[in-house]
Image (tube, rainbow, N blue to C red; front, top):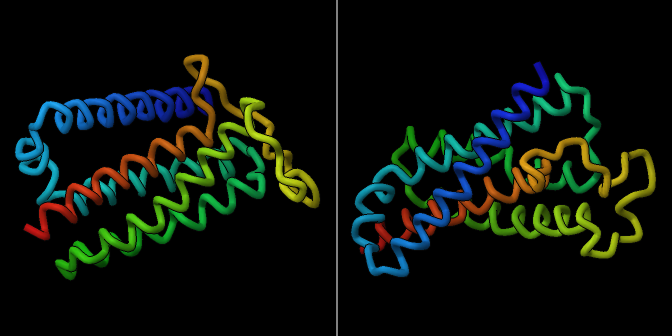
Length: 175
C-alpha cells in the first residue's frame, strides 16, 4: 500500500508543480484577470485542499508507512497542520483574512522545506543540531520518486502552492 500512496503523492506533487508553472506563465503573459477569476474567489478552499492533502500525506508517511519524522519534518508540520483548522474556520466564517495567516505560515514552512530538500541533495550544509538527538537524520531520503521528489520537496511544493493561492486570493480581496 505504501508504494501506491507514495506514487500518488509524488504524482500530485508533479501536478502541483505544473500548476505553479502554469500560473506563473499566465502572470508573465499578463493574464492576471484570468487567474484571479479562476482562483481568487476559491482561494481559501484551494489552500485548504492543499494543506489537507499535505497533512494527510505526512501522517500517512509517519503513522502508516512507519517513517520516523526528523526534526525538520516536525518543524514543517508545525507550519502546515494549523492551516487546515485556520482555513476551515475561515471558510465557515467567511473570513478572508485567514489567507494572510496562511501566507505567513507557508512562507516560513517553504523556507524550512526548501532547506531540508537541499540538505537531502547534499547542497546545503547540515545544521549542527539537525541530525543529533533522538531523531533520524534530516538528510535521510525515505522516498525518491521520478528521480527528484522526496518528502521535503512534496512539502515545499504544497507550501509554494498555498503561497501562490493565498497571494492571488489576497490580491483579489483587496480590489
